[in-house]
Length: 232
Image 1 (cartoon, rainbow, N blue to C red):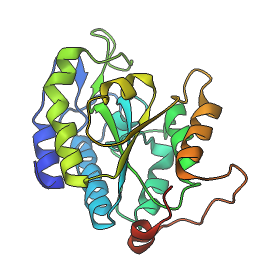
Image 2: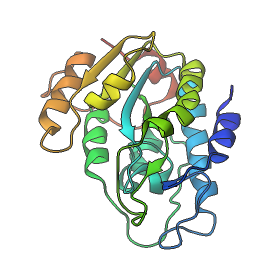
Image 3: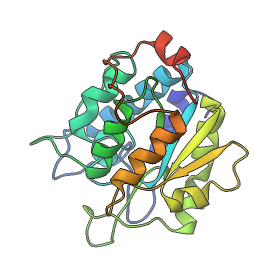
């Protein structure tokens, strides 16, 4: 799993009970015929662009959500913000994998509100990189189990090896605790859900040395800008 393509291939081979693998599985309710392939391609494009641009920060939340990464293949990103994700990485190709109306996710909205205010992109990821759901409700969210984390932990370590980040931003207490043994500086911020949006925004702005009143930069960011962007 040393390249984005081999990484995505290995991730697509993972199958767990009561878990939707967006890079492998097909949702009969919402997916296009080649939905899993599109999501896998989206992930590869994001990782390739991040490596080329020398992105040095990874943002990591707990689980992939059913309204966000399950549908797009891009962690912490819903369909509303696929265009923003493309622009942030220099205009890469990111496509919808689903049919019907565009679906929004609150966490993704908060994440992308902050990313639009930062002068360099971040790699987005989850402790558990797939979508865990209740056994009788595939369109629900639940916390992953310890066994599920152990089964997919090698993907997190492989991602860190590929990106070689200078720091990690843990989104939420659960993600921060899971990353406590990582030998890279980890800075934990409040998760934006359940009334935590203001604290989340303030926490990320503090890490990046930004003021809430500073104007947001124009998208897209080019690779050269991403490599030289000011990072506190």
